[in-house]
Length: 29
View (cartoon, rainbow, N blue to C red):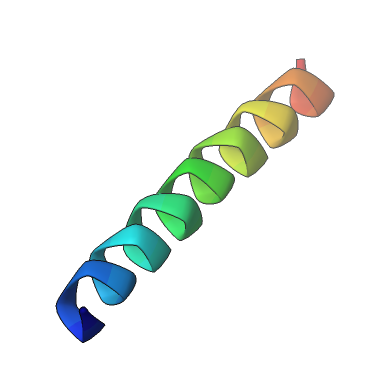
């Protein structure tokens, strides 16, 4: 259960980081 939660958190953080990078790139453009 803990491993599943950790993996889920990593996926959420990764998706948030990717979205953040996209926003920063859009702002720079």
